Image (cartoon, rainbow, N blue to C red; front, side):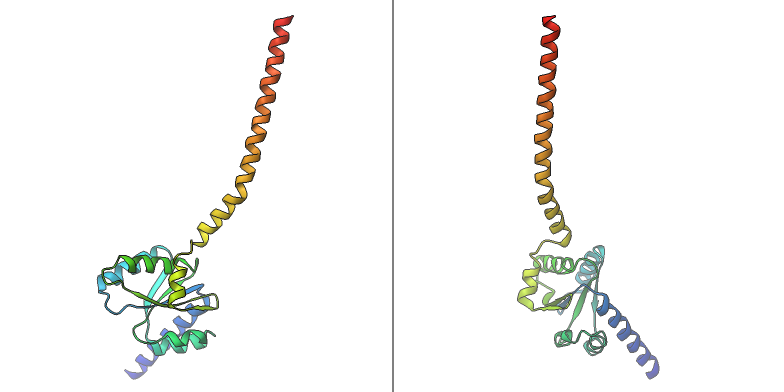
Length: 179
C-alpha cells in the first residue's frame, strides 16, 4: 500500500516536471471557496483554449519545479494552489481566469502569481497582464498596421489607372466623333 502511494506521488512529480519544462505561461491561483461546479466551468473554459487547470499538492509541485530547473516557482506553493498551464499563448490563461473571477459572485479564484518564459510576476503584475491583448490580436494589429499603407498605395494606383482608362476612352470617343 505504501509503495503504491509512493509510486503515485513519483508519477505526479514526473508529470508536473514535464509540464513545468514545456509550459509558456503558468499562473498560480487560490481556489479556496470555489464550488465544484465553478471549478468545472473554469476548467472547461480554459480547456477550450488549450489551457490545463490543475489543483496540485504543494510538496510535490515544489519537488517538480526544482527538477525542471524552475526553482523560482517554489515560493508560490503555499496554501490552496491550482495551476493554469498555458502551452501556446502565455497570456490566454490569465485573461480567462481574470474574466471568470470578475464575473464570479465571490471574485474567485484569486490570481496569486504568474510565470512567463522565465519571468515571475507578482499578484499586481498578473492582473496587469490580463489587460494585454493576446499574442494573436497583437500580431493581427501589427499586420494591419503594415498592410494599411499598401492598401492606400493600391487605391491610389487604381485611381490613376481608372483615370488613364477614362482619358483614353474620351480621346477615342473624340477621334471617332471627329472623323
